[in-house]
Image 1 (cartoon, helix red, strand yellow):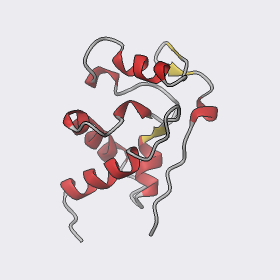
Image 2 (tube, one colour):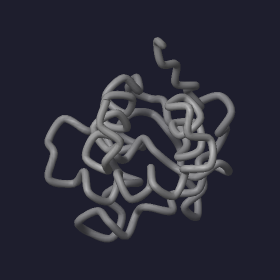
Image 3 (cartoon, one colour):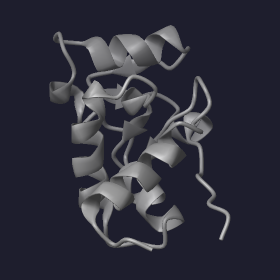
Length: 110
């Protein structure tokens, strides 16, 4: 098994592709699911690098408090928020309302 960033990033993208429409997860939850609990920041780097990959719904990944911390990586001022709102998720001041209700816990088969 490779241990380079490309392999880690691809494993992150596999999880992000599973997030259901209308749900979000966090960088830390993805890291935990990959068995890399302390790698939330690396998950963030993977998400930053995902914007040229068409089938990765990066807008569904937020910080552990439901804040749209990655929004500046999207084209346009409020694109991340608009994409979430199109899926029925309410956002006020970059904060997902009812975060717990919309949170999706990723699972990885060992």
